[in-house]
Length: 254
Image (cartoon, rainbow, N blue to C red; front, side, top):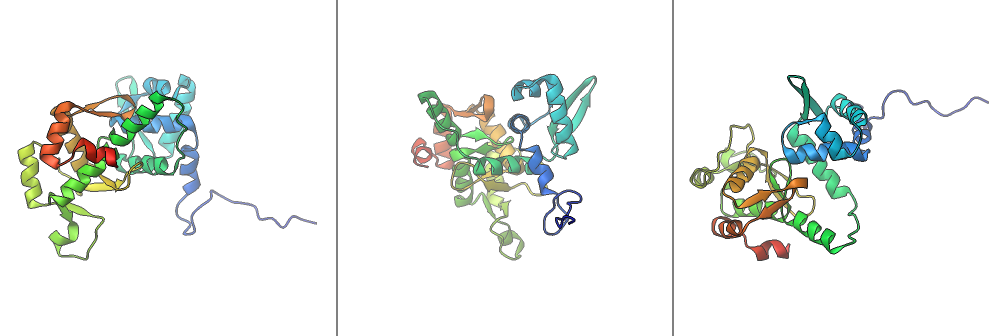
């Protein structure tokens, strides 16, 4: 008797038939590929294949295969610099959002030492998420910007339908940013935000989020470290409290 099972034809798709979700899932199902994506999200720029191979702890040939698939899948793009080929995230905002979503869904690794516990605590307190601030500090900065009126819902400025997911920099916000020395580059949507992977709330991203991180680092309030970790300096604690009303207790309570 002939089989009654249907043969699959083509890639698996969503109900609408226009998106191949499985292809993206396959790209992030490999640990080495994930390490490459996270490294590029942390750096915020382009990195050579050799550096990414070291980060992923794989051979140069294996890394080359991973990079080829990530480029073909639309997650990475290649930049030629003479003889070198550097790789960066193809769409930083979208791919960084994907990484954050995966981090929210992924199970927490077991903590087996005091050192790991301290690292996990520092990671939750402040970290870099593609050149903007994540963790408790990022969420508190978002709260401060909203409560102090530096950013407001887009509908209040446009008179359109309420959309609490979109924000604009207010007139007072632009004045504050100029006084504070934050230079926000031109952008179609300078204020973006997304749900934090470890904290209850959203943190600033987009052009404003990147410009704010740059300014806080230049002031010496924040120090960037490997693996996306961020250290708040003594001057940083003072400045954050004075400018944004954020104290050490606020972050430790989260």
